[in-house]
Image 1 (tube, rainbow over the protein chains, first blue to last red):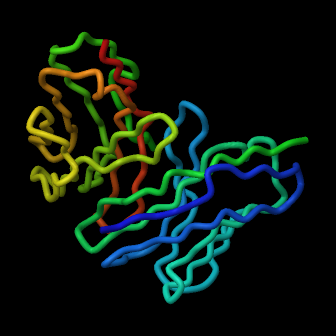
Image 2 (cartoon, rainbow over the protein chains, first blue to last red; image 1 turned 180 degrees about the vertical axis):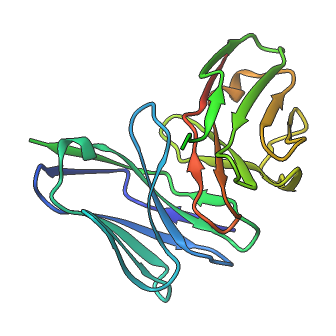
Image 3 (spheres, rainbow over the protein chains, first blue to last red; image 1 turned 90 degrees about the vertical axis):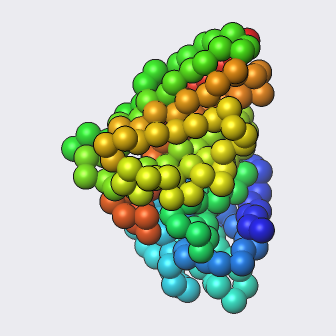
Length: 110
Length: 113
């Protein structure tokens, strides 16, 4: 089967840096994605890692280590609007479906 | 351009009734996905279409759930004999190809009383 684990909650201060970790178990693997979801909103794509290493997109970076079955999302210069749930997701070896983690609720405090 | 749209945004129905949820994908996207999200959980895969055909329906919970995409664009998720446990947000996503980024719609919030 396939499963992902991520912390349920993270709290950080405005302007700080926060890292959200994700570990996964899968029999097939085509990359790790990250999505942001505000309350009542649609999941919004943030980043994707197909290969090991760091991908940077503005204030957001994502990292993948296939050998460790581990990835993380790094958010820099935190803003209040970054308060949301963040999901890691893997695409397995059976077509395009995504398997999501339970989500990490990020609270940014002033 | 326009994103993925879903209608209705909210649906309240009674146990045992039939409901249809509609998804309009991004124009030109060949792959379309349905997910279900319960409160405090991540989206859970239901079914995925490549063109008009269901390429993977392994996530449909039982035979009360059915989805179609007759012309390879708009899709309808159909739920028969609704149960209270079907209450959730039903999300639709589309991508240009199965291996490309999936873009989600705002979802339909279904409440079964």
